Length: 420
Image (cartoon, rainbow, N blue to C red; front, side):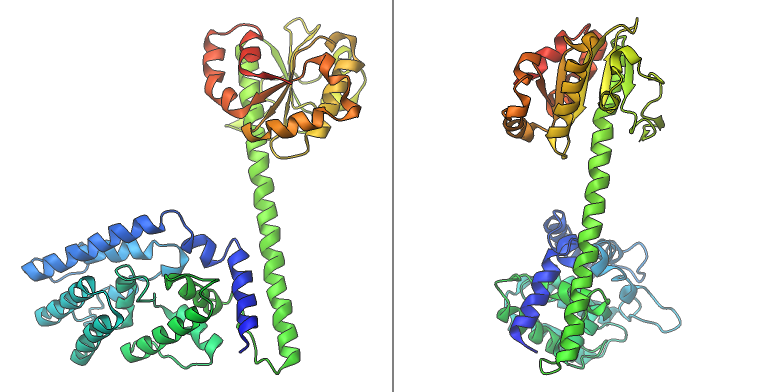
């Protein structure tokens, strides 16, 4: 197994938006969960020491804390299975056997109080000697949330991934095998520390994604054909992830673009205007209906001026008598601002009826500089005469309801937009 091959695998894994690294390890809520889970473990220990834990898993403090772990995204899905009471097998034997229950509580307490690998391993070996039925390395998932830099998570997929990557033969259900795997993960993590983390959750997440089949472990370095097949498979995962990321981004962009159009539609109707929605957006879903609900079914020819580009302007407010454009809006969420400006020019310069209409480029707050740079293009030398204004999302979001309720005319929009 070549060092650079594994490094390549780790780099690809980290760049995959669907990998455990991005979906769980970098999850914003992860560290908050550490604190709550550790408090839950301390509560389990207190109840066991006080003799008030009881003899049932359901409804216990242990069920609460293990349930919290099982909700930690895909890597911990099923973490509660090992602790569920199996009445026919009488396992795990920590509910009906008081001595075993106290030993389990002592393990959790000892690990919470110590801060070295040697002390944790000693506590594990002491409980392992007791041979408590059904109480095995799944407990490591609890210990991980106490000492994430000393203990690694544990499940079938992690074991399978470790065996596939290292050629080991770690078995489930045995503490000695878990400790051996943990040592192997620590060594592997040391070799790739710059790409991973002191937190063993990162390296365990990589093992999980290999063991669950998302990634294939690299073949022996001397097998060129197998290495080429592995590289092709890695590229396939990369391409699939990139395609999914593009599709998700497109959906998010469409949703935001449609939402802003909906705001402008509702505001225009509230101010007493007719509203036109771009012909290619009219059927988009918005709220409980369609974006064009309540809007003009057709744009008057006198306004469109025979130009199809005008019918593609995102939102037009038209006076009630239909003889003028009260305001025009181009929403530029993430696409090129160039095309929106061109449509605005077609409207203003192509039809006498709209030559004095207020024109607004509606865009995220961080796109003002980009808007200004586009407007400096020689092709847009007439823009300064037209007075196109920049309307930031934040201003529209903050003031649209007040304008709809108390405003009249276009003056409030002029006040919250910026001259370009």
